[in-house]
Image 1: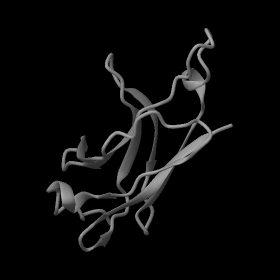
Image 2 (image 1 turned 180 degrees about the vertical axis):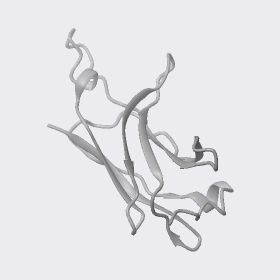
Image 3 (image 1 turned 135 degrees about the vertical axis):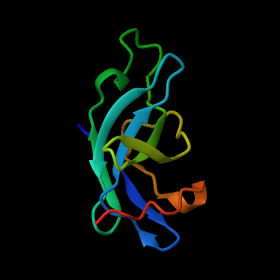
Image 4 (image 1 turned 90 degrees about the vertical axis):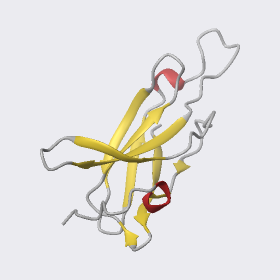
Length: 117
């Protein structure tokens, strides 16, 4: 069954639309990409991901759980994606639960990214 990372992206003036949000699993040996979505007019996003390698471990001693964070990206004038904000990492996300992550990009010093019409 697919799980979701969802939430809202805003700054001090309100919701931010047309931003790309990526969900990642934080790992010591390199982070795993989980999916991406674009914020709507209300600043909302929703990313679905499958259990894949986060399913119960094959040796049945432990369960692998993703350590989820999101990155918010915008395009520069030359079309490159640039990360403008990142959430904290939510460790050991239970596979039975969705994860809500709201992010206020103004709180990270990235004001002025509201150029997405």
